Length: 101
Image: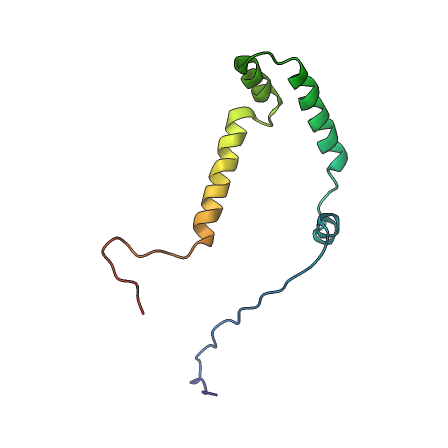
């Protein structure tokens, strides 16, 4: 085992922990609220609204009314997912650059 020079810091240790639990147990473990009842009401409302849909324009109008924050909410969520994916992926070398070995 190599010794570190005085003042030199040891690189951080990487650990992976696997937890086997149900979604409900994970929610409780992380202290998240139970939104099952609110979700059921939301789904019932959407299902009831969709029963009267007769064309795609009407469907689009209902979707805009029922979705949280409408199109803006969808765009914000899409940006969130894209940014998270970018942050999670390793940096890629620029075109023409060779990856360091």
